[in-house]
Length: 101
Image (cartoon, rainbow, N blue to C red; front, top):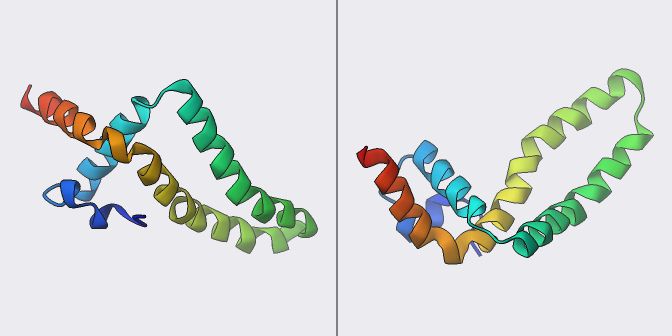
């Protein structure tokens, strides 16, 4: 399992922004059941953290919210990579085609 975009051999020659666009293209190629499953997996990982936010009030809520904003991509990117691994070749080809024009 890949935890960041740097570890994917197919995406090594691309800049970070290009890698993110390729992953976005691959995510758009997912079928509806795969998208629903991905959303459920993300929800299952993030739900305990957001439920714990209910215990904070006022300004004490700010640090956990900032932490949530930082942790969100760190927790969800590996899931997105795992779900799009089979679609990456097509996504790279579409990305190259878009950039030639």
